[in-house]
Length: 94
Image (tube, rainbow, N blue to C red; front, side, top):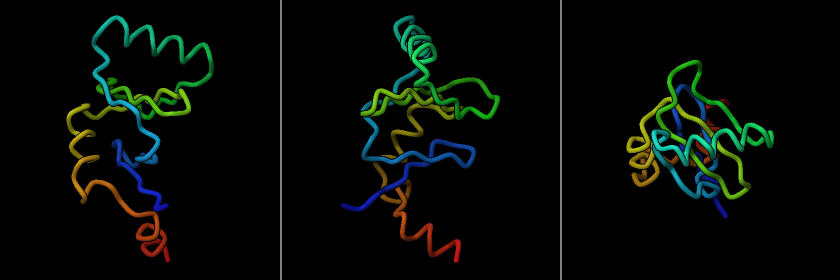
């Protein structure tokens, strides 16, 4: 199985196959989800100090906050150019 990385903004990536949902943080249930994850130590803040614009839910019940719009992340997930192969990243570092 190939591991694909999804760029969630500001140099941060997640494993694309582990993403269950990408949602907007505006609703009250999403705010509760974020707070519950914080209390359970399952919250990862990848906003780099910016406003949260997307919440990413993973299959391990981790919640990842991103400063990039949910629509943008979803588009990156769907387009082949947005999902990167780990082998390409290794080659770039060498």
